[in-house]
Length: 146
Image (cartoon, rainbow, N blue to C red; front, side, top):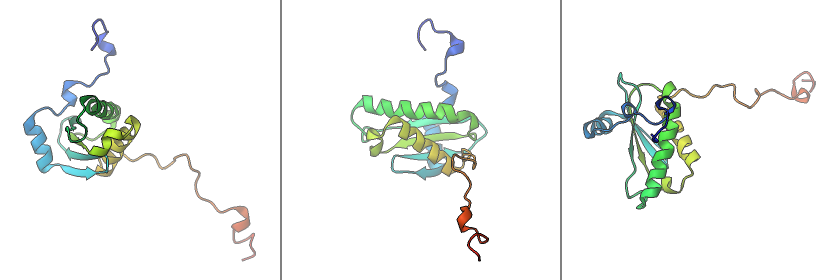
C-alpha cells in the first residue's frame, strides 16, 4: 500500500487470499483437482476456507524477473475480481513457458477458463450476445410448401 493512502481504498491482494505455506502448496498438488491449458495448469483443493491463490512461475517460464512478475500480477488481478463468485478452496496456478509471451488479458482469460472447467466458477449466462437460433421465414415448412 502506498504511504498516505486511505486503508479503506486499498484494493490489493490480502494475505488471507494467498496460499503461502509450503505444506499448503504440497497438499494442493497432492490431493487437488488439476485442469490444464497450454498457458497454465490449475490445481484446486476444495475446503471450507475462502478462495486463496498460490502462484508458481519458475525461471523456466522466463529467466527475467520482470516477465515473471508481469505474469503473476495479471493472474492475481483476475483472481481478485473473480474471487467473490468462486467456490472455497486453495488454488495454485502453475504458469507454462507460453505465458511469458501471452498478453495480460489472455492470461486472465485462461485462468477464468480453467476455473470454469474445474467447476470452481459458474459458467457465463446462456443469454449471451448471440440471438437464439431460428429459421428464416423462407425456410419454414409452410413457406416452402412442404
